[in-house]
Each structure stands twice: as structure tokens, then as C-alpha cells.
Image (tube, chains in turn red, purple):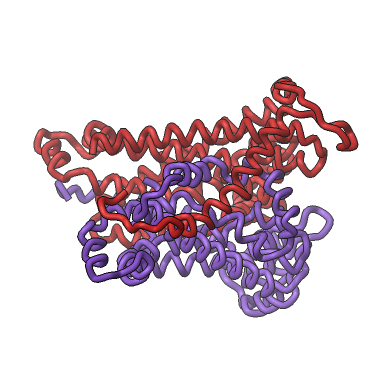
Length: 293
Length: 281
């Protein structure tokens, strides 16, 4: 809000109208629809609907396969977040030490950001292709049989690698920016006190970097929960036997098979609650940062 | 550099080179596979040095596609371009004008509008898949470019970024403009927009990549081969058991699909990196 404004009774409404219209049509209405469906039940032919309260939620939460996909999502997100952050922090911290060649490394490391997630999955699925993948061939020489189409653990590994590969560039950019914001004088002071590079990193740099780290933890969890659908669909199709079926993938997959609107509505609402929770956490962080800054 | 430790420096470069190899390896193998002949591409182990069939493969897939997406790839690329540019321009336009309204006007529903835009952050398409498809099909937008583009152009992050930028502009600018008799729209086009050029450049990169990389939405909003986008097409080219995958063609299509976003990121790296950090914080 500015001190001086333009006065016009209608112009501001015209200016916000497109954004608001799109939001209502494609965000609020569908979300409301999902909310409504989640507390209703439809008969098999879709002729009548009636209010059933929380029945749909009870149904999904007593479905062992839904709970299994909940577990899968959590395991998957933990792997993606932890390994993605560790790798990119190591890369950003080392890039911060190498002086001028930093720019070259940065250019080479940010490529995957531009690669569509589904394509990243195709690339990795090709490397790990059970019959002619380059990595599969190399693994076979060490006696490891690779076939993610039948081995659940290997399927999970594949989607984690593709997701981390995709997300490294994003994390790297943020960690680099965070590291640049740390005053040189602090690490220099620690060096004068006799702290070696590792000691400085863990005792000086890491604590100062914690806001960035926290932000990235939330962003990576959101990414793993919601934006890895293309990776899972292209690399494993949720399989084998649901081993890589995350919550988002489950909604999509079941929606095309069974047209149980109540159940799919309830699943959507659970996901919305998760995103809203994560977004609130993220914005809390921003407020805190503003206060400190 | 605080102290000079040759060994640590060597170690640092080693770690970074390892990281670069991890990033580049899948891309290199994709490139190699795209240069092979059909016979070479099913040979185990796969050659690790490029062959000579890159152009032949690209031409083949460009004209005929392959696998379950046996449709000219040029059509898929064209669809992707229309979608990506549509989403980018749409997002930029509607967010810059709504941010302008929110910052430079005082109107009764202002905070409600702000809140409504904010909510879009919390409702990615992934969580409202089927109800959104229903809305789009009721509006008869399935298999249209409008159906591919419009539902994705609401953008809280772009709006916030423009808002932040407008808030940082000195009030004297408006006052001076008003003394000179400039109207609100005149001020917008002659002063506000030219000043936000760097923000627009950064968001252009981010939004173009966002639009080009879409996958779930095009699957839901289209079901005819003429409307398939490049990313969806490449996935369709990978066989699902019934047909053997022609990997040399799939990888040729993959290279083509990665090219536009990659070029944009490399050319506009500086704006892009700054924009990314600003728009998400």
C-alpha cells in the first residue's frame, strides 16, 4: 500500500479481475467441490448423493493400501529431502571455496532445473533399464541384478535418484545465495582462532545457514509430496505392487479406475490439509526472517 | 580464500567434478543413444561414444514420432511452445496488473483479493485433479489451447514479486506523475512496467520452464494426438511392454524437448538465478 494512490472506483477491479476469475474458476471451485464430495456418498449409478459426514475419511484411513501409500510418501520424501540437501550443500560449500571457477561449476550444475521432471525420469529409467541400461550393465559386473520392474527397493531408489538429480540445482542455487550472505569476517575470525575448514563449516557456517536450510527442507518436502508425480509416472508407474505409489499418484491412478468421487474427494482433502500445513510453516519462517533481518 | 591449502583445494575441485559428472552423465548417455542406429541401440553393452545417426534419428522422430506417440514430434513441440508461451505471458500479464492494483489503489475488497490470490499457493493442481478436470470439461475446454493454458496462469509468487517491487518504488514517482497529469494507466505503461524489466526477465525464465515442463495437466486436459505436448509425447514413446522401445528415437525426442528450456536457462542464467532466489523467499 502506498501513501499516494490513484483514485478510481472501477479500474482496480478490472485489473484484478482476470487473476481473481482464474482463481475462483480453477482453484476455489474445484477445491470446494472436492471438499463437498469428501462428505457425500454417491450410489453406484450417480443418481443420488447424500451426506455421510466423515465416513469417507474413515474408509480411506482404514484401507491398508492407503496407509501404505502414506508410508511410501513419507519414506520417499525423507530420502529425497535428506540426500538432496546433503549433496547440494556439499556442492555449494565447496563451490564457495574455489574462487573464480565457481561460475563455471554453477553453470554446469544448474542444468537439471531446466529438464522437465518426466524427462529426468526417462533419462534415469534408460540408464537403469533392466535389459540394456548402462548402469544395469555395470552393476551386473559386480554381481548385482538390477530390475526395478520387479524389485520394490530398486524402484524406490530409481525414483529417489531421478528426483534428487532434478532438485539439486534448485537447492544449490539457494545454498549458494545463503553462503554468499555470510560475512567473510566471521569465518576469518574463526580461522584466526585456529578452526580448520571443517570446524568452521560446522560451527560457524551451518548455524548461520539454518534459515536457508529450513526453507529448503519445507520446499523439498512439498516437492517430493506433490511435484514428483511425473517422475513416478514415467519411471515406475507407481509399481511394482504400489512400492512407489505416493498419495498424489494414488489419487490419479484410482480416479481413472474407480469413479468413487467420495473417496477421491476425501483423499484430495487430506492432501490439501498437508499443503496448507506446509505453506503455513513456510510463511511462519518468512515472518521470522523479516523480524531478524 | 582464507588460507591456502593445496590439498583441500584439490579435494574441492574433485567433489565438484564428481557433482558435475552426476549431473551430466544421464544427459551424455541420452545424447549418445540419440546418435545410434536402431541395431546399435539394442546392443548390450550400449556404446559409450557417439555414432553418426543423430540427424537421421531427429528427422525420423520429427516426422513420424514412435511407440505409443506415433505422431509427428514437430506437432508436439509446437503444442509445447504454444502452451509454454501462453502460460508465461498469461502469468506475467495477470500478475503484474493485479499487483499494480493492489499496490496503487485503495479499494474495499483489496484484502479479500489479496487473500484469494494467496490461496492459490496452497492448492497445486496435484491435489484437486479431478474436480478441476470437471470444471474444464464443463467449460468445453478439453483439447483446446485455452484449456491447457488458462487453468495454470494464476500465480501467487509472481504477483507477490511484482508487489514487492512496486512497494519499493519511491512514492515521489507517483506524485510527480500525478502533478504532470498522468493517469493511472499512463503511469503503469510509461513508468511502472519499464522499471520492472529485470523482474519480468527473471519471471519469464521461471514461468517458461514451468509451462514447458508441465506433465500432469496436459495428460488430463487433452486426449487426442494432435494436442499432445512434447514432454507427454516422450513418455508415450517409451514402450509399455507391448512394443519394443526405439530408444534412439526416444532419446532424439528427449534432446529436442530439453533444448528450449536449457537454452533459456543458460542464456539468461544471471536473471534466472536472481529471480529464483527472490521469488521464493
